[in-house]
Length: 330
Image 1 (cartoon, rainbow, N blue to C red):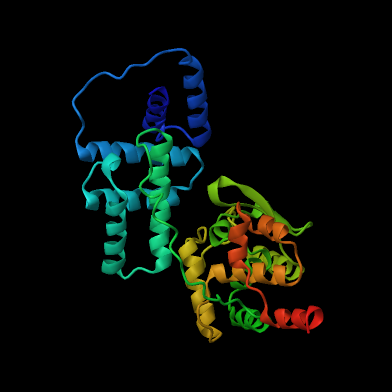
Image 2 (cartoon, rainbow, N blue to C red):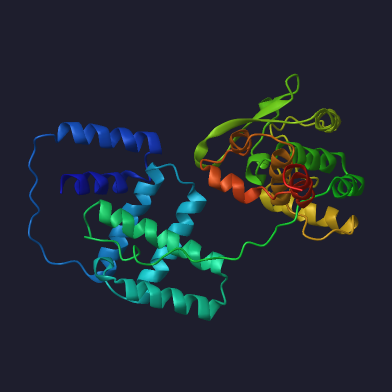
């Protein structure tokens, strides 16, 4: 009961405090309420809507304290809220069959892929697992809904020739610097647009990026990228701290959508399909592992918490498999 009260207080203060302050609030409340007995006052039962909404709000607050990004929190909230509205039951009474039926209808109505459905399942697992951990329910109804098997198609990466074609298709020095930075660092597009000039260490050819959950790490770029970045920065006459600016007035910080749109345009000029920021990241991971970089170092380079995530990015070069077979077996 005491833990629930503290969590509820955190939820009420979530809009006014950051994650560190919320954690400190919990520590102080836990210390001050040690040895204090708290009894729940009898009151009329809340309506289903209020109960579900309240539990979801507290859950989202807990995820915020864990360091989840606002984008992820919004996705969690909308996914769980839509399910609760559709099922029409208090969260404490939702069964495994209710969730299976919802997932089946969700997939049928939307034509969603297995990957999407499994993502929804994982969010439900997080929500009901949290309810179980906080003693709101005895057992999560998602426990008996197993991971959905998904197809694992081989995703494309850029070849050396493709990267040169993209570079040749860049009509702006900014775009050339942007393509080279993505290709040599493998950083996320969100990390790219968040970079400032002061983050760049040209002497060491490295920069600090802020990844998911506010974590920061150092990434490294090559000599060609350094030259193109310096040429781009030397061509600018503004005082904007952002590393990359839009080409149109008033020349503000380039946003994720702007990068994605620009890369598609460059890809069309190079007569290439599916040119997007994430493909550069996958290409770097694949090449690094293909050339013998230890997977743990690739994990650090990409900023992954789990090594399994890194393995999903790395595609083994079939030519190397053939050569290894000849060397060790044939």
